Amino acid sequence: MSSDDRMNSRKKLFGTDGIRGTANKYPMTPDLALRVGQALGYVLKSLPGRKGAKRTVLIGKDTRLSGYMIEQAMASGLNSMGVRVLLTGPLPTPGIGFVAQNMRADAGVVISASHNAYQDNGIKIFGSDGFKIPQSMEEEIERLVWDDSLTNHLEDSDAVGRTRRIDDADGRYIVYAKNTFPLNLNLDGMRIVLDCAHGAAYKVAPAVFEELGAEVLVIGNEPNGRNINDKVGALFPSRTCDEVLRFRADVGISLDGDADRVIMVDERGRIVNGDHILAISALHKKKQGRLAKDVVVATEMSNVGLEHCLAVNGIKLVRTDVGDKFIVDEMRRSGYNLGGEQSGHIICLDHSTTGDGSVAALDVLAVMRSTGKKLSELNDVMTDVPQALVNARVKSRVELKSIKGYEELTLKIQDQLKGRGRIFVRYSGTEPVVRVLVEGPDKRQIAIFAEEIAQFLQRQLGQ
Image (cartoon, rainbow, N blue to C red; front, side, top):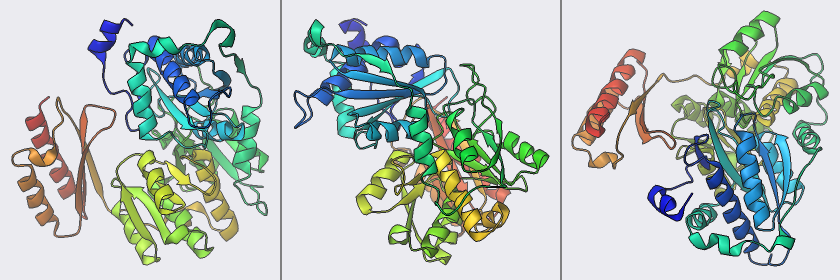
């Protein structure tokens, strides 16, 4: 990409969860990935107290076809800055965070678009502490990507970095995940249906549950580069529901493409989403005195039923903006240890630095084993309040409150809900979409309200 092209296409790269886009189109092109690698390498070499030391970056990916392309480009950019690169191959996003920290790497890079279709890809970066890098570092990388002087900092030919593949990353992650399960418990005699979404966990997740004693019936474990998240995994748990009933399994576990989120299924074939997983885990941790400050962190999208369930049991729900990064930031800032999203990102800071689908599932299985209860019984601790979610495509983004008539419309609807529901509207962090969520006791009524708001915004913001 020439300097003129870069000037013309210069845009914000990092969204709420790294860089993401359609593979081989801006911003997910090899040349841009190379420059991101160079910028990351330069930033790592410039960190205080680290000058002169050889830097190491771990790169992992999911099973998308374009992962090879982005992986090699990133590695080349890092090598050109004198950084050593270790390639893990397919490994869950939380596995990269853990293994990077475990191997004392300076950073970990994940090539993945998470739950998106195979045509998309993305770049997420973890620091040496296993947490996603702060916004200030993202902004510095972004500035350097567009800086023509970046190539002036390339290393001399005798100082370029090496890239090599490592063979034990899978084993390190499997041992780590198993170690989050109580030593006095096992999964002997438990039958599990496990959907790996043809994604990053297709090798490691079955091993985790099998080595703890479970009988594991695996689906979604035949990736071909194009079938990741294709009507399988956490976004399509109905297949897991069917298989649980078919094989009379005790539980179903449905991961997404990079295995940082999980949706579970009880033995009756009912879905157990992230809100219910949080409720099950929080109540058990509180009884054991292991729930920090008796607080759970969730987003504005979590069902108000979770808030009611926790409050009855003396637990406070703290809400953040949508995105697991915001949840983790709040947890670290305030000293909480459990948080997550309705979509299945569950973070337990006692064990992991980001959402981990396998670890979250193990936490629920530990509750089942220690209490002797079936998942259906645990699932019933929380009652959902009906939700209606409508997405409206938009051409422009403006402050919602500045739109003429918007506040009047939402106030009118809030009055009609009579204090028994709520409205939450936000722009998507990755798509030209505004999301309208309405909660309330009457399913038909809230669906009408959500559609009314969505149509109003579509008329105003235009598509």
